[in-house]
Image (cartoon, rainbow, N blue to C red; front, side):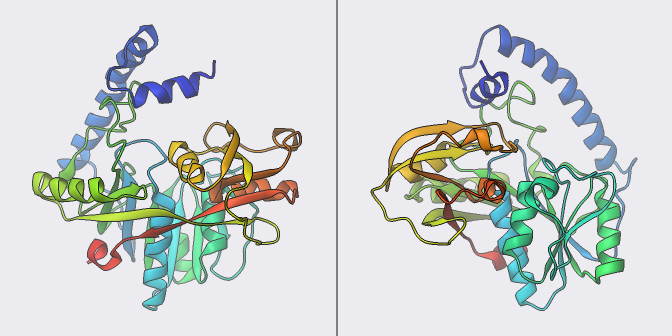
Length: 338
């Protein structure tokens, strides 16, 4: 039994019970107390966040991974680059091999300095897919922001997964909510997926993420959340675009028999997207941020389809039978940021 997988199942089971869940819920008391004390100290001004000489946007969520922050961050960065801003994305760099105690410039907006295994899958994907946008990683976001401003001339900073990082002042807090999974079993970590009790008073812009082909339910939810929470709310539609070979770029025709592989926070929707157009003979799920080695895939016959997040690491293995599902994320950026 993979304990991490079993815990994730509990997180999204509203009827969760049993010895493991009870033990996790007891631990959640201490996690919740720590989170509440931290937020109280910041909310009352006993601790003040540090400010930097740039406009800072945080993109985050109330729950643990898999909501869809990375493509949203990418769309925001493209928007500001097109406006003539010098943009940097600052990430903690989770999953990479670099020492994140220091500032690592994954890309300065022109040159790419690290590969996926060193940078981490998400920072590397952002660096590869965004022109003229710097990507930096460091556990000390303030230090990374200062480096981006002083060394790279940055005017706009996007914090990837920054909502709970209250040490740094932000000018705009954007929070994402998965339209299907919402807040799971509504328990605090580790019994549930919540990083803290949802506080919509700190949210400037709420983005309901719909990873489906029918967005009717999500559109209704967005209207309800805006009215109920009193926060400007928008809808982000995430849909499959096409499947391409990660080496040659060639598209894979629909109807083929494939093996689906993923190592992301919530892989269910990825598999569902593929089931609409391909015959899946096997699904292989690894832990989030898994570092692939050749033995993970060398005995798989036929075509493999994975996520773009996984593709940046699988490409290092040099196999020509691996394809990635390209997703498109569409939302009204101006409504979100203005």
